[in-house]
Length: 530
Image (cartoon, rainbow, N blue to C red):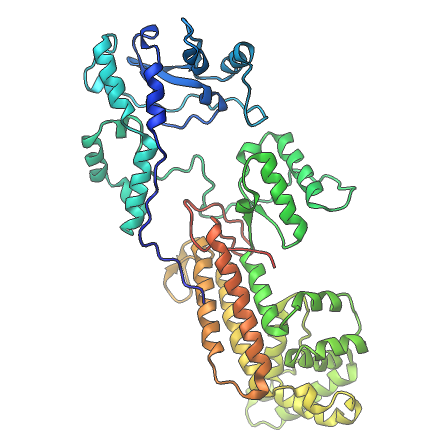
């Protein structure tokens, strides 16, 4: 089983800020008396800030201005400036005066409304008169030496290396210590805090997400490029491209291409925004356990055959004991005479019992499995184990009619094999049922209060199943059960494959529920492709 990553010594290195600080040496402060470097809390994401300075009024930090860096670098006497609450004026100036446009090739939408600003700035705290050239220089030096992102990287590195809780950064005494050492921590709102404004977070209870935005007709072939084109078109028609989070897709190869193209169109790496359903991974792992190699190809060959013809019968038989049991159950299920015979065998035994409860029992029929649903195979095996004695009797009575099958072929590995498979599949069933919860805390039947279906439960599900498969891989298996030894390894490899891939993911998708993004990069999260 793949080991969980252990963070030993991780430091988030801040980028070199030397060029950033030196660029302010050329700034003509004499043309902007009463202004200092901006202490804005949020990052300036618009492309215009690559070509401009960000300054603010020292006595009113809501008055911020964008000053053209191209004008300053060219030593213009009166460099152009514009209010920073919008980007249109800056864009017009850059294009008309300098022929500078968006380097990415597409115009960014208007910047957000003015960010929330601190009630006091550093000049006010230190009682500096920014109209005085000397004190203005002191204020700018203090502001220039503090970088909000550098500070946050150092705090995150400390949390990771000390294995502390992320909530530790919200401790009021720790924050007071930071603010005592440098008041800019408070004025720039540099504290690491729980913030849901820009993240998709899991919420309790889980809200339903079933709103259909569009059903465009795809007249061309279903290639990844064509799919991406229609998806992006719908998103743009609603003006929500900047709010797009993650996509839940199946394992078709054209969806890989679609995500790459959507990512290019919307400005993100497609594979990092793709959700993978844990329930689908369970299905792949169980199919490997039951049918071995090429289980998907086998499913495609079988699917759609209503009757068990000779070809389908042989396909099932080659899939080992489970396939042979399927053949037996199918022949019983399709025949009224065999079904009635099975019921008669049960009633005969029940009627001879001295126990009134047993005599009152009703006969059971076999359960036929569906190749696309592994749980149906589990239910088929369970019912067969429950009826094992009656199936044996039925077999002996009908043996002459099933001459082509042969008893040793149909019974396969014997009762022990099916008991073992049933035991293994129970672990998968347990994990699946646990993750089908709604994530709400409530009192359970056992008396405790707990929640099922939480995002982190998927990680526990991986660990639980991989641990169980490790145990079964080490079991001393009789040579007749070589089929089990091979398939249990295939099952383990399938789980480990997706568990290892999840180091690149930030998301978990328990089955049947829309779980939103988890704060931070959670190692080893979920997946959904072959």
